[in-house]
Image 1: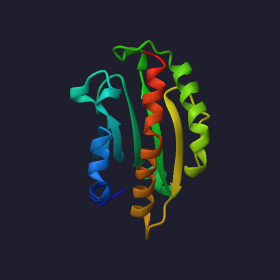
Image 2: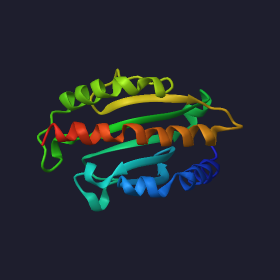
Image 3: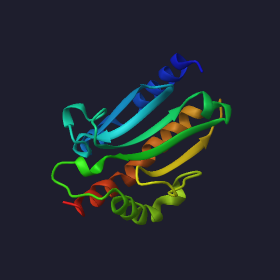
Amino acid sequence: MDANFYLENFQKIANQLNKNIFSERNIEISVGIYVDSVFLKLYKKSWSSNPEAALTANSRIFFSIWVNDATLKKQQIMYNIHALKLRNLKGYSIQSRKFAESFRHSFKEFEHNWPNVSTNHGPLTLMEGFLKMDSTNFQDEILKIANNFLEIEHLIDETLNQFK
């Protein structure tokens, strides 16, 4: 995988996101490399046990779009929402399985907008899906799925509120 190529393209996608809308909703945007994957992540500092290091905090929720050698061999771009170690979020009393069940129940009405999505995972992965890799317009597809997140980000806040 040409990591620089994907980093450059993911950054171009991030630059096309409407910063005003994301900022109004307190959603941070990050592009980078984790292990062997290039990612674009969307998250709120309030979804983290350490708002100053929300991207790497021990306990956090984030939406991620990524590629790596394995996904590219399958001609796929992956996406998911991770909920890591939620029992450590201050101000909440969260059991991961109950949180995942509640989120997934609310997510059902939005599922049809998410290609190849599945909620049949453990509690750390609230949902996961993939886009078919089309080398001519993969930027547009990623941009669309990133913007799709705006339609469901409130579900995370609403689910967290159930566990205050």
